[in-house]
Amino acid sequence: MDSFAEASEPLIKWLAENVHPHHSVIVTATHAELLQGEKVHRTEKFLRD
Image (spheres, rainbow, N blue to C red):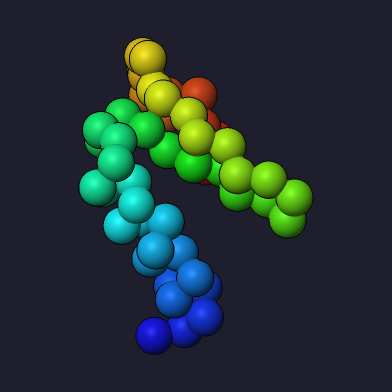
C-alpha cells in the first residue's frame, strides 16, 4: 500500500463509522472540513472533447 492510501484509510474508516454516506471531507495542509451533501445535479453535456 502506498503512503497516500495508508494515510487516507483511517479517515475513510472514521467516515464509515461516524457519519452517513452523504458526508465528505476536504483535507488541506492546514485543516480538515467535514461536509454534508444536500443536493447534486450531474451533467457532462457542457464538457468539451
